[in-house]
Length: 453
Image (cartoon, rainbow, N blue to C red; front, side, top):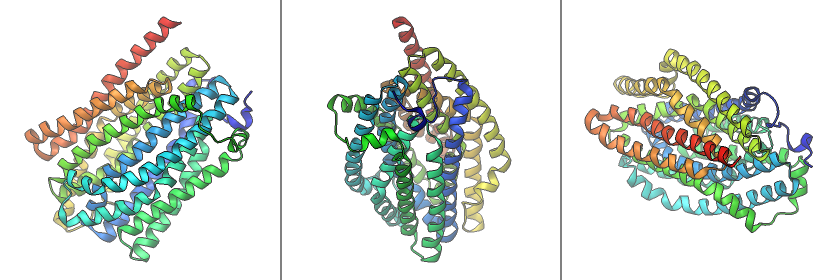
């Protein structure tokens, strides 16, 4: 039997669903806010200290950086589905095996990405059509920041294991440590040492290392992990199961990111001013969706544990509770963005008065559209996470395909009819296309479960 005191700080198979989901999500929301706080400070330091060109150069790398991050998150979260399921089944042997395989596979992943991401940097610059006057800055930033890939993978897999065991507080603490150190080092390296964008990248690498070490230290105090630590070996059958779960999620994330890269290339084609305004808003994108991603993590763990425990009705209850929490959060965030959005955006944009004014107009228009349509995005996070917790990662991958098609097609069509502002609506249509697939997939999956019952 699993020792719940040490390995399952939060049992999601018993208790009121909405309370469990909310209590699990709150630390993750706070962690996301801290992470986005770093992003805001980083953007402020780069934008205010180094100027519009540096801000555009770093911001233009966002989709390339996200491509790497989403691959890491896709695989590690897929591994976490199996771990959460084993927790729900209360099977210590299988849980140990799942943890072992997840860490070994993550180590191999870090090696592949460490080499592969360096190779795609230059081709990505051409695909994104990044202006020549800022391209060297973008390349330098990516070359340095990708050195930290092993630390990013380590943090992600350790955090996934902890969340699958029901512990959402340690990832919060890790994010506080990471964000605090990143802000201090950002200011030190960029402002103090005058290292430019290299300083911002080095600060990120060091903060990733600190967060990974902290999660490992806490995880190593867990009995189930200690016992497993000396037994690291790949189990072929378990590896195949984890890759079956993780690969579609990684492909899904990769497809979504490719669509984003194509969209970014359209953004870049409209010049540095539009880029700066668009990028300033995308920096807030993480904040306005931070509760959604947190609810998503909570729903994966909640669904995985209850699926392992064969409590299907609780999964339905959890979905309803998650959707209610999501809608309430969307309304709150939208009010904040409509009220204080301009002031927040002003922290990111600098330049001549004319440049700043025009970039702000673009940024605030985009922010209002995203804030008003936020429930579409939050439904995506909730339903997709339930399907992932059930192990239906192929359906979620298909939703990623539809999201990419809509994002790319919308960029072509809407930019021709409405110019640069058509790109703002493209993002919303991409969310909607994904929702259609996910909601249909959920009802189809539950129907199949009922037929087997």
